[in-house]
Structures are given as C-alpha cells and as structure tokens.
Length: 158
Image 1: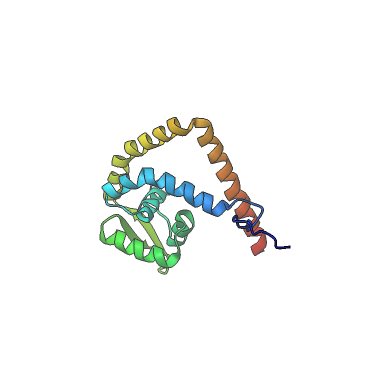
Image 2 (image 1 turned 90 degrees about the vertical axis):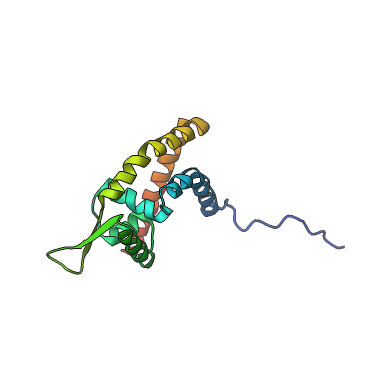
C-alpha cells in the first residue's frame, strides 16, 4: 500500500513565526512613516538616532546602540555621516577622553519640530484605521514582551 503525500508541508513548530510577524508589522508601520523620513532626507537609522537624542538628551554611542537597535560598527558609520551632514555633534568627556557624548544640532532639532505635526497626523490616522484599543493593547503587549525578554536575558548573563 502506497501512502499519499500531502501537498501541505508539515509545520516547523507548534507556534506561529512570531519574529516574522513582528517584521511584517514593522514593515507595514514603516511604510506609513518612511515617506516622511525620505522627504526630510533621513534614513530610518538616522531618524531613530535623532528621536532618541531628542527624547533622552545627549547620549554615548553604546547607549544609542541599545536604544536604537543598531550594531556598534553600523552606528559608527551612521554617526560619522550624520556629523558630516550637521545632524549631530560629538564631544569627548573631560574626565575620560575615551568616552564620547553625541548631541543633536539645532538643524536636527528644527527637523524634529517640522516633522512633529506630520508624525502626529500619521499616528492619528493609524488610530482611526485600527482603533485605539488595538494600539493601546499593542503598546502594553510589546512593552511586556520587551521587559520579560530583557529580564530573562539579564538572568542568563548572571
């Protein structure tokens, strides 16, 4: 007796592909915001850095790596280009010349100010499209996921 083969491949795991779902959600979100960044001559990485510096003030590169999820080698290149474009300044700490503090320039602060109403309009449109409950639930779920995964990672490193 010959067994018929199914045209449907067996699932790799019992769970849906969460990393892929998160990437798809990110891409759908970024498709709303990418045109704004492009219109202001910014890449996604540059915008993440500008936003982090705007929200948290001057930071060291290692802090930017963590906040912006950019690898250290990539960040070095992005910061060099941003400095050349006049988006950021870098200064050494007086007490430790090996350490560098990255700050926004007035030019970048002006970009943030000009983009703020456009970004808010995109968020309002998103809220209308999917509903505030979905947005609020998403913030809660993503914050919880990040917290739990970071806590587990810290425990594993100990």
